[in-house]
Image (tube, rainbow over all chains, first blue to last red; front, side, top):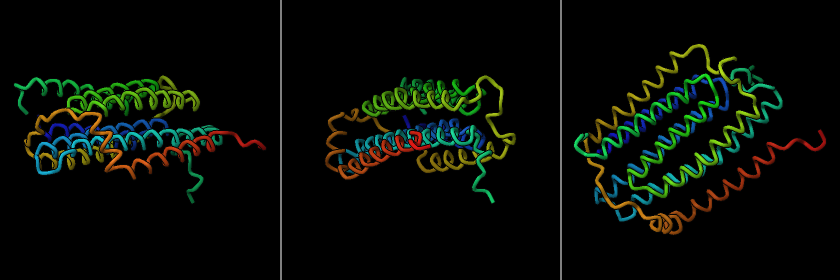
Length: 108
Length: 169
């Protein structure tokens, strides 16, 4: 297995997530696309950890460090989804809509 | 990529599933299908982690993402009454600037990584033991770990404050 194949897969997933964030109007679907992007980033972190450990140029435990980073990303993503959906819920309660192009109260 | 290695075939199958699932996530007209296809994508991510020898991360992805986050999304879909099955536009009408941005992002990321790393082998070290991850978290990363626990506490309180109705309203 080469490092590049994992990086290209992750780049593809990240680009698909970018496309989803840009075209979706519904705020819940935008959050879903962000999750796809975060999954791509986690693959990058774990793959680089494994690669750098096996080059032998770094201390023991580099692969574990990459995986710990991925775990931190997962944790923060879980917190982000909780807060994000709470905000979406609040917007829906006030405006009866979660379409991001209708939320223009701050537009002058 | 050496096609004689069975792991590369496993990788190709997982990659196709992940890419197809994520394309459905961003293009489908049905919100519930998007959430369910996210399960396919994240399951593929867990399989990739096992392929890379990261079993604990794979188990965490299954527990946290597939077990909790997707269910939370389905509740969000239910509560906000997102349009199901085609009625109501889920997308912006003009799609080509977004497609252009995504293709340019992919070209830059994939082109630069392939140009830099070429066909460097990722190597096949032993899988990382969960005990190694534990000692790494509680020795080297103990302060980020405490910060993350504080972030989770703040998110918990913030979620409650945001989602409850005002008592006097």
